[in-house]
Structure formats: C-alpha cells, structure tokens
Length: 251
Ligand code: URA
Image 1: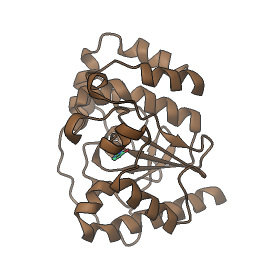
Image 2 (image 1 turned 180 degrees about the horizontal axis):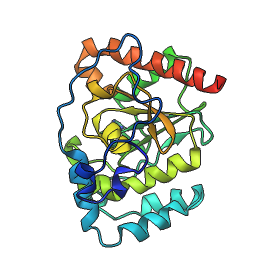
Image 3 (image 1 turned 90 degrees about the vertical axis):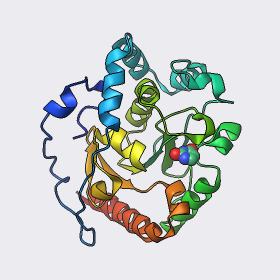
Image 4 (image 1 turned 60 degrees about the vertical axis):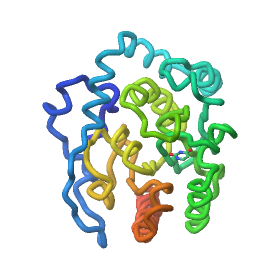
C-alpha cells in the first residue's frame, strides 16, 4: 500500500482498506519465489496505538514542518515515549542528505546507543561490507536511519507505541532526503514503512512504494549474522536494488 504511512492509519482502516495495486508492486522479479504471508499484527497494533495518542496529528504536523536543523534539535530533545529514560543518547541517522539510497533499519543497539550513529556494531560492519560489494559507502550517496531513534532496553523488539510516536521523525527524514530508492531492512522497517503485516519473505523481490518512493525489502543484517543461508538472498536483494535504481534512472 504505502500511500499513507502506517502511523496515519486509524484502527479499523487496516482491515477495511483495500490494497491499491501500485504499478511496480505486482511483479515478482526473476529468481524470487512467491511465498505465503503469515500475518503478525504489528501494523494493526501500531494503528491502535496512534488512535490513543491525543496530540498525534498536531505533533506530526509540527515535525513535518521542520527543516534539518530543527529536526536535529528535536530528536535529542524527544521524550514522547519511555525510551528517553533508558537511552544514553538518540541516534538520529547519518549520511548524505541528498542521497539516492536510503537504508532504514529497526532501532539502535548497544553500540549505536553508545556512539550515536546507526549500524556501528557487528550488524553495521556486515552492512558496510554489503554496501562495499555494490560499490556504495556509508555517507556517500547513502543515508542510514532507523524507525526508532532510541535503543529499546536489552535490544527487545520495538513496541507499537514507540513506533507510533517515533515514526514522524523518519517520515520527515525521508521527505527531506527524497531518496530515489529506500531499502527497508528487516520486518519492523518493512512493515512500518509499507503498512503491511506481510512477512519479509513475501515482500522481497518486488518494488513497493513508500509515499511514491520505490522501496525494496530485505533481511536485517543482524538476522543475517544468525542465519547465514539467507545471506545469499540478501545479496540477491541488493543486486535487485541496484538494478531497480539503474532502471529508474533511465526512465
Ligand atoms: N540494528 C538496527 O536496526 N539499527 C541499528 O542502528 C543497529 C542495529
């Protein structure tokens, strides 16, 4: 779907709204197998949380009116969810603010919380290597950010409430960067951006749209560290992303 970010959807809309068929979304790229989509309820839960946040619309409007400087001041000051009590610092995002590529992960881990930069731990080293393999480099035509700007304690999964409250920051980052391609890494980034309860496996191999921006889904680098056989699938995803961007630039 991806026309309305998940945090703008109200409870009830999720089940009710038909999925419009974006032009590029229906085609599975060669080499990718179709797979069934078991529906966990993350998107539904996030939508339910948004409905209970009294100032959600006004806050989102305020954040979406910000330029880079204001946004960079607002994120470290944010106390919209309980994570501000346990974080060492916020992790805003890093890279080329005019990048073609935007990579979106889940949330900072311990190293990111300590250093204030996304993907600097073990998963980050794998990500840097994967980028290098397609001749990309952190900071050069690439911007990296997370759905959450604060570390969930003990690296637990983000809570729907935290995603609902933090997401306007990511929305604004994407609006300011206007990337040509988004790579959503892992279930949280993919489901939140694409407003979908689908599994990663079923979202791979297609060009989705987030607010009109072509978006490709792949596994999270931390998952790949635990599941070596899926590294080759992530490699296929990256090559698919390279091909997609090349084709988009030719249009
Ligand atoms: N995992 C993420 O999703 N983001 C980071 O910044 C680090 C690990």
